[in-house]
Image (cartoon, rainbow, N blue to C red; front, side, top):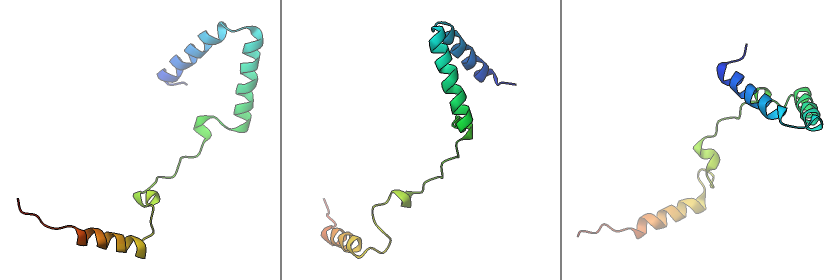
Length: 82
């Protein structure tokens, strides 16, 4: 049994298909059949692995160059009293 949202979506597709020529409808059915045989429907795709912030970092931990840059920045800062 289809969920209500899936049923509405299916009805929309069917209304759109009825407006197409017979040749276009056959092409649609052919492509849909091929995608189902290949298992490329969204429900068959594997879930992506979650990313962590370290996956997006541009340096390795304990990177000497990054450590020296950080030290230079910290040393360049000064406490200012206004």
